[in-house]
Amino acid sequence: MANDLLRSLLPADFKPQSDDDWRLLDAVAQEIFRPARPIDEDKLFSGRINQIRDLLDVIYRAGAHAIVFGERGVGKTSLARIIDQKVIGSSTFIKVLPYQCGRTDDFVSIWGNIFFDYKYDGKDVVDILRERPQPFTVYKVAQSLAENTRLLIVIDEFDQIRDEQTKALIADTIKYLSDHPIGVTVVVVGVGSSIETLFGSHPSIKRCCQQIRMQRMSPAELRQIVQGSVAQLHMTIDGNALEQMVTFSHGLPGYMHLLGLEATRVALRARTQHITFDHFTNAVQEAVEHADESTQRDYQKAIQSTKPDNRYRQVLLACALAKKNRLGQFSASDVSVKYSEIMEKEMGIESFARHLNAFCTEDRGPVLIQTGKPKRYLYHFCDPLLEPLVLMIGRHKN
Image (cartoon, rainbow, N blue to C red; front, side, top):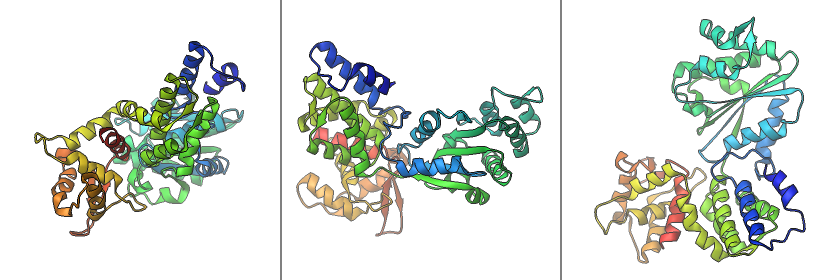
């Protein structure tokens, strides 16, 4: 939709003159930037070239299947949407059957919904699955559908599944389809740090699936999101503003879209097509207010206190600013460096050790997870979406 709007309403020589023109730019900006919705247009899904290529290789390879996994907010569902609607959407010989899992789903409901519009031997597929809830049933149904077309089955939000038997049956089904190729590819998408996080101890799933880890975006990929989007609006952006967006986003594309959108709208309200650092600064509060609601609640729970002189907000900000290793982990000494900068005086670990411990308890989330041994503990944020929010609030408060 965004590209259609741009082609029809924003020609290459477009110059806003009237209030209606500026409102049009604002409307198109809200369509281009996607902070809260999965991206379904490949031109808007900047970066991720390697992941898209890996997934396409799987789709066109007989007997191959894939598991797309990673942290919350790194763009897994967007990748699935792009493959579905754009990359192969125009193909006449591939049929995409997507399904988004819920907490109450089981083996029968998942495959019954995937094959909802189809019958087998004159019966609804879900009725057949209730009678024989096993991988071979899925194989036979898929085989009948794949006679004249290839099938791409996308099972999204697989981490929502709680039933271990369902996970085992899905794993066995993928293994069966891999051992008996019939022109069907299954792509499982879910939040997790590994395949084991999603499927548990089912070693066969590793052998028959391409593992596609969605990592946080690099600074270059994050810049591409905003630079490409503002260019479509015939706008430009100050380099300092762009770099601050990259810093705040912590590798998460949703926050880059959010900050890009709010800064763009601030500039448009000022009737200019150049986004300055001041526009970005003014946009931070808007971004905080429009951040994910559950993440905002997590933040408030983490810092709440009846004592006016508590330092939970400052310590949590120091955690977000602390130097991280490649796994996103940091130590108490890393926090000490940033906490001292925030408080503008030397702050030893003893001054915030109880805060770190509190952040690891249910009373405050937990917002941090502690690993390792005493005096060598490492910490990381439970929810990766909280880190950028802490930075943005810290910027606004300070």
